[in-house]
Structure formats: C-alpha cells, structure tokens
Image (cartoon, rainbow, N blue to C red; front, side, top):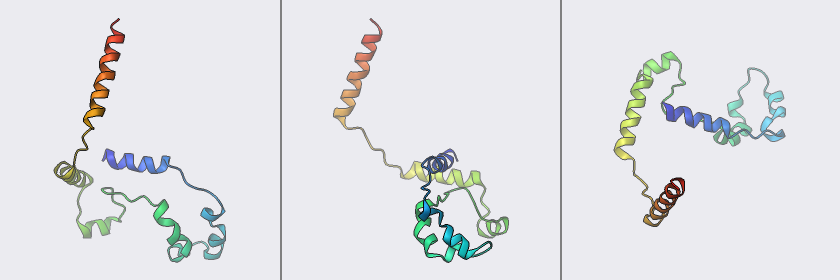
Amino acid sequence: MDEETISYIKRIKGGFEINEETLAVDIIKSVGQGGNYLKENHTVEHIRKEYWRPIIFNRDSYTVWKEKDSKSLLDKARELKEHIMKNHQIDYVNPDVEKEIDYIVKKAKNDLLK
C-alpha cells in the first residue's frame, strides 16, 4: 500500500503544466457545467499525460466493486506483494562499481577513525 501511496505522491509532486492549452477555458465554456468532457478531443489528447491510475486502490462505486471481485485493499496488496516477490529481477551492481563503493567506505572509515 505504501508503494501505491508513494506513486501517487510522486505524480502530484511532478506538478501539472498550466497554460492556456492545458486549462482549456474555451472548451469549459462550450461544454458547460454537467457536460461530457470525455468525448472532447482535448481530453483525449491530454488524459494519458495527466491521469494517474492506481493498481490496488479502488475507485469504483461500492456496487461495482461488489459485482467485480470484492477484494479488500489488504488482499490486493498481499497479492501484489506475492507477484513482486515471485517475479522481481534484481539488477546487480557492476563489480567495478561495487569495488569503488567498498574503497570509498573503507577510506571514509579510516578518515573518521583518525
């Protein structure tokens, strides 16, 4: 669940481009309150860049959630954890880089103990 929250926070921290194009005041005026913005070309062009989609958090109504799978957030988090534990591939550090890191740590310890 932390991973999902962090992902969302990163999206928010990334900021939003705000200019005449992204604000689309002309479209807001033409579609109006209660109108359908999803069928507007402007929405289609911009939604993928701005939209954040959760993996385990659920945005469905209670009725839809109940009809689908009714899994709790904790159940979904456990399933995702199991998937990650089973499929994650570790990217090992290059041995030369590892030696350099060891050298830096050893030197720092020696310098601190003087």
